[in-house]
Image (cartoon, rainbow, N blue to C red; front, side, top):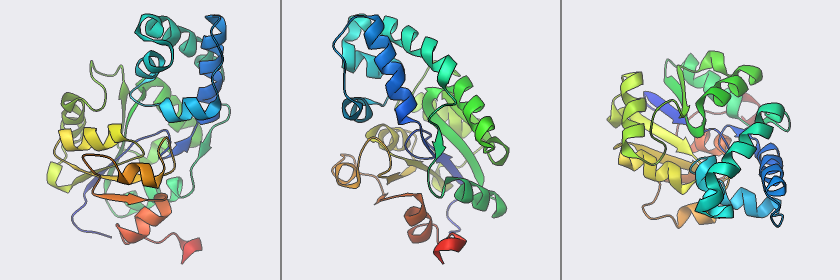
Amino acid sequence: MRQDVETVLFDLDGTLIDHFQCIYRCYCYAIEKLDLEPVTYETVRATVGGSVRVTMGRLLGQDLAEQGEGLFREHFNEIMLEDLHLLPGAEWLVKELKANNRQTAVFTNKHGENSRKILHHLGLEQYLDDIIGTYDTAWRKPEPEFTQYALERLGANPETTILVGDSPFDIDAAHAGGIRCYAVGTGSHDVDELKKCNPAAEGVYPDLLTFAEEFLNLVEPSQA
C-alpha cells in the first residue's frame, strides 16, 4: 500500500456504482412528462455529469432544466434502489483501504441524501468516513469551494489526498482543490476520452481493480 496516500475521495456514479439504467429511466420519465422527443441511453450516459440540473440543461435547454430536475427527482425517489450495482472491486477496495487505516469518503455530484441512502442499502456506508453530495452545500464539482469543503470536513491534507473518478468533472474538481486525480473508464467516459482531458488526470485506468493494483499496490485476492 502506498504511503503517500492517506485519504481517498471516491466519486459515486460510474466509479463505485453502476446506476445508469435507473438514471436513464428517470430522464425518460421527465422528458415524456414534458412531451419532448425521447433520447437514447447512450446519449444520457455520455451527457451525465455535474448534477441532474446541469445534465438537464444540456439535454433540454436551460429554460427547462429546473422543471426537468423536479420531474427526475419525483421518479428517482420511487426507483432509486432499482437497477443498482456495485462495480467490480468497489466493495473490496473500500474495505481494504479501511483495513490499511486510510480515510475514505464519497464525494459526488449525486444528491447527498440519496447517496447516503444508496450506500447504506449497498452496505458500503459502514466503511466510509463521510458521504458528501450536492445540496449538502451550495456547491458542486468542479467548484473549488466544494473540494475545499470536503477536505476540511475530513481534516485531510491535500498532499496526501487523491480523488478517484470517471469524468472531467472529477479531474477538474481535484485540481481545483490542489489534489491528484486518478480516473477509471467505467462511467460516462472511456479510457481514451479520459486520456484526452485537459487538464489531464495523474493516471487513467480501465477499472478500479487495475487502479488498485497498478497505483496503490493492492491486489484483490481473486486476481492474485
